Length: 117
Length: 111
Image (cartoon, rainbow over all chains, first blue to last red; front, side, top):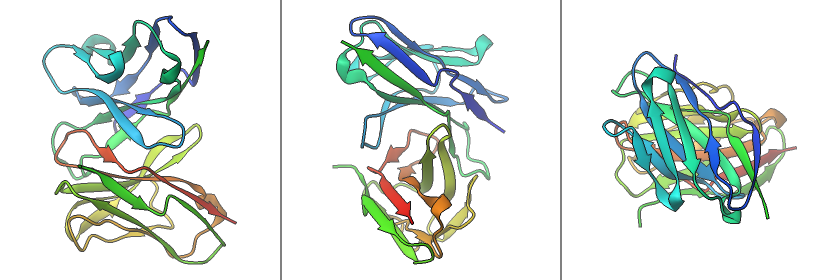
């Protein structure tokens, strides 16, 4: 079964500092990969996605993520964090073809980002 | 505007009183799912539907029911809610193996 690991439960960075959130997945092939952000009291918003091709993908709000097949990782990065980036971030994977599992998204447990001013 | 709409946003109920959380999407998506979000556990899938009249259990289906009589609607039913179903619930829709669009969430408290 596919699984997603986000090893950092909480991360605190200073405003203006760089950020990297880690995500590792376990699956027999390259799945579709996603990063979502959840601001307090809000639903989940898609930051970026990887399906195939260029392993460095750009997303909204200045975020990017790099897919590394050899490490089964899809880490999220931002060069300079803004106070408004404080939120919870979720990595997710989906199977690459329709199966009996209904094409479900499997989520990591999330990383809570705190930004110090 | 493409969206997934859940209602209600907040709900406090008592143990054993049946409730329904509605979910509607306007994107003509085939796939719809319900997730619950609990601290430290991320989002876990409750039920999913691949199309009208096609539903199946996710990872944590106990105590929940769903139906998919129309493509746009996918209500979540708690026949006899219990306190361990206190959680934040999200409905999501997608078309094929692409990103999911999420509703704003329903915060349910069962006392």
